[in-house]
Amino acid sequence: MSDGGLRVDYFDGRGARPRRVHLQAMGDELQLRAEDSPTRVLLTLPLSQLRWPERTRHGARVAHLPDALGGGELHALDAAAWDRFARQAGVRESLVVRSQQSWGQVLVAIALLLVVGLAGWRWGVPLAAQATLTLLPQRVDAEIGALAFDQIDRQWLKPSTLPAAQQAALRAALARALQRAEPAGTLPWRVEFRASRIGPNAFALPGGTIVMTDELVQLVDGDESAIVGVLAHEYGHVKHRHGMRQLVHASVLGAVGSIAFGDYSGVLAGLPALLGTLGYSRDLERQADDEAIAVLRADGRSPAAMALFFERFARWRKDKGHGDESDSALGIAFSSHPADAERIARFRDAAAAR
Ligand SMILES: [Zn+2]
Image 1 (cartoon, helix red, strand yellow):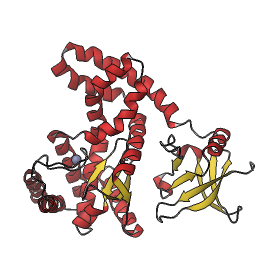
Image 2 (cartoon, rainbow, N blue to C red):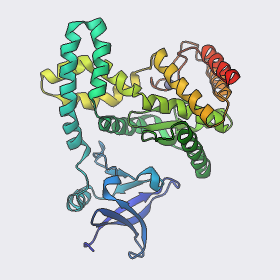
Image 3 (cartoon, protein in one colour):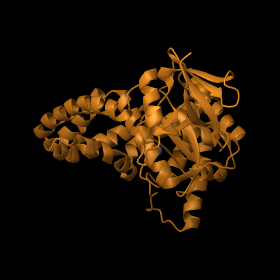
Image 4 (cartoon, rainbow, N blue to C red):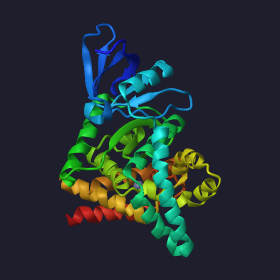
């Protein structure tokens, strides 16, 4: 047994209050032990499964536990102590270090993008953006997504007030539906419920974090099929890497400028904010809607459930005084684009055709 370990706060992802625990490295594993009785092991996980992002602006260090262990977070009490502990335990290098390694690959990809882009701005960029996306490892999605989630969470979101049991049931319902739709296995995903300043909505970040607001759950009166449909739509954005695609499109110019001055960390820092301002095109929304239809069908549910969501969402927006043209402040969230009526008809048709 190694000495001392590290004291951290453990948020189990269910309650709002942390539990003070001791973190102990045992070979390739980390053990969470009760602070009051150090021989009691609360949780054991492989070191490699701990997602320990780079410190936030405030210097806090927050590690994410894998969903398979119920999610949850570890919050360091003392950043310096954690860093020492992490080095000794062999925790993976910090996000920034890894991001810079990723950015080596990103740079190669963007250089390629430039060459192709010069061949024809109009036709070259979409093609080259696709090529760039293909070259970007999925790992980059996860890292950009983690940064973006951190920023958006602080700026827009508050802890969910939905009962933990309801959250767990909805996650389980999505897991079941995705498992039926993609028996060979899905990409990584996790669902975070949050109260929000953006009203009823949902969005997905690169790497698989899907956020759904409490207000959306309330908007559909907790209707499980509608919620699974919306979450499956968001999973569609993750699966087809729509967020990354938009980022690659949008960041070409900025990236070129930054690379010219050798400052690509600036590009990375700007990406989460950029992600918040981007919207998806109609085509990408349709692709995500198709995913929702496919998942609902595979799960034996009617796609009409999504029509319920769009109808109520349209009514909410109207009551709020948002016109048809008004979009959410967060670009990647649900908006009126494409028009609700068109989407409602699409889900109704899909329901009728099943
Ligand atoms: Zn969407």
